[in-house]
Amino acid sequence: MLFKRMESGRASISDAVYMEVITGLHGTTVPNILAAACLAMVGAITTYETGDMVTAGLTVAGVLVAIVRLVEIFAFRRRLARSPQLGRAEGGRWERRYVAGTVVTALILGLFAARSIVLGDALCCVMAVGIGFGFGAGVVARLALRPVAALLDLVAIAAPAAIVIFMQPDLRHVGLGLLILMYVAASFEMVRLSFNASINQITLKRQFEQLSRIDPMTGLANRSVLATDLPAMLAAGTIAVHTLDLDRFKEANDRFGHPVGDALLKQVAGRLRAIAATDDLVVRMGGDEFVLVQRAATDAEATAQRIVRSISLPYDIDGQTVELGASVGVAVAPGDGRTAEALLSRSDKALYRAKQHRGGYVLARELRMADATAAGQSVSEGLAA
Image (cartoon, rainbow, N blue to C red):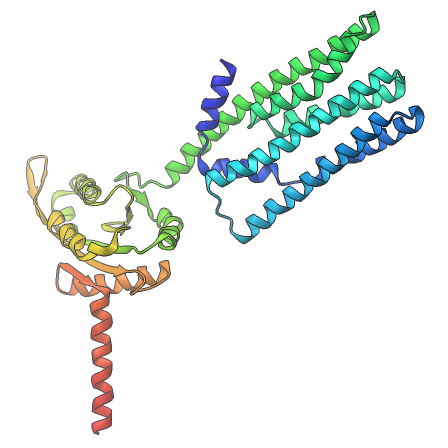
């Protein structure tokens, strides 16, 4: 039941939050360095006092794994510096590498503690077990959102020592073994509690994120979404930006009242949703201004025609028929601009021209061609003069 809850909780984490988790795992090198330093110190002392080469081998192995983990952390940071955008699949690969490193480290520390117990040097045993307890505490603190990894680490670090201890069934060893098992059980419970608390926080965060992106009047995305999503859509391929204003909306709002005006905006939003494809973006910029970002820009003009026709159909609001119109400006990348700012600016200019004609649509490329023609005529007239 616990693992089902954990797996469902992991799946509920959004891509953005998941990447925050992965970035956080790679956010510091201090625990890794301290664990390696402690292992090297205790391993050197134990090897010096006992002459045990197995301890020396485990110490070297632990330090080498720590170095590999440091290299992996720095590689992740370099990858993030090149581009902060990571897909979930790529993030999963980085997570698996990180988790593999922690599990191997935990197993080495567990074997190290078990070997110290076998050697029988009390002080060395205390130091070795202490490193294991410290590493386990760090696992609980840092891997609560990756609970399966945390549980694997705790088992890997505790199992070797527990097995060795219970093979020597005198009262002191039994007491130490029970202490280790109780520590692991308490750590399991802490992971569970931390996981549940973190998942609840993440759920609230997702809800707030969603609310911050939605226009409360129409349920469409708000203009903040346009600022974040439009550049990403532009980077993914050719798009068309349709900027539109409602014609005669102010008159309808003044005549019938704000409740009718609000109902009109909601119906307009519904018609725009019906026109938009599933991967298009529909945004209410504010007032009676909307933006539809179309991914498949090959039929941008046909979409603009559909917008004008659909918005211009009569509206039935509480038995009252209201008629509106739409003015649309269309800018298509890359011809009308290669940046989000350029596309929005040129679609706004095209919208302004459409509003001068009291409705319909204007393509930004037509304005560019008209400007180019006017410029050519000015040059010709200047040469003739």
